[in-house]
Length: 383
Ligand SMILES: NC(=O)c1ccc[n+]([C@@H]2O[C@H](COP(=O)([O-])OP(=O)(O)OC[C@H]3O[C@@H](n4cnc5c(N)ncnc54)[C@H](O)[C@@H]3O)[C@@H](O)[C@H]2O)c1
Image (tube, rainbow, N blue to C red):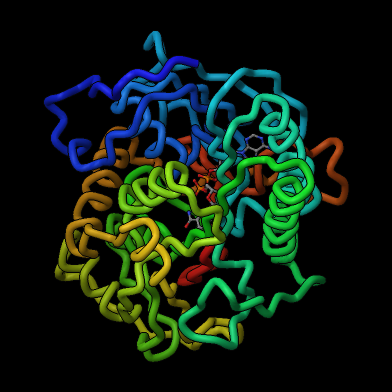
């Protein structure tokens, strides 16, 4: 592979000028049609890379990468990572995995297969091609943490038999596989532990607090807060996160490394910010706190700061404004996006075989899948 210097494909697009300019490569992004993957692809394409996006469209959508379809340096493949993939690349960003609980719990066995078989397949690809592989792991590997903020050395407190374990333990296994391929076969790996991320192209109905508040505000409903609203969360803007992944991929440190925004906001502050941006007349309603609502989740990012020279740049006010604008324009394009169309014929998933490619129980009009009206309302699921 010959390397050329990165050239911006849209020099007028000032948003991308602040991203690191790195020699161009042939890059595979699994899960590239999803929320984070599509933002990462925007940067990779703007930097002149040859990009292959491989996605099963389980929780992602072609719309997220539509602007690159037809570009000579972009290739979109419908591919399920639980099957092997034969391509020639220099770098692999392995993001394929549903990230919100409503998606990953829909078919827990499939989530485990995606994490375990999918990661094995891409590690095999990296081993054969000599490509560097970056795993998008998660803060959920820390489980219900007893240590705040969570440092990379903390081994976590995960329930291996709970409903979330398909995701938490799946990602822990994916990390273990990466480390063992690195130790045993010298596969060049990077492990990013991503904390709660938000921004444009999030699902309307994924049960996360940012999207829930925005959707409820756009519907003109009051914003529900569980408990006193003083529980804190930290939110990383998606472009900051994507820049962190890019830096990690192109540095010498294998990780694991936390990437997230350590600045904490209370849920009450978040609700007030969303209300101010969408409709200041909306009410905030206090409801009873669910039992398992974590009080706090916060990344410790000293390593990212020191090793990658990375830290979040986009303040919550600015990121929220961009997110609200994106939700508004998608809702204007199709107002039904704000409401969920229930698929009453949907049945619980017992086995993975017939249901592997089937959507969760409720589907929004934009083709993404949601928690349902009775689903989690202010869950900071993390992912
Ligand atoms: N969003 C967050 O806050 C967050 C936090 C921590 C970690 N992560 C990780 O980042 C990655 C991307 O998350 P996201 O928020 O963009 O989620 P997302 O659901 O929007 O994107 C995941 C993508 O993977 C695809 N996918 C799922 N299973 C697949 C399979 N078997 N084969 C091929 N493609 C498959 C989906 O169709 C989707 O496009 C995930 O690995 C997730 O675990 C996200």
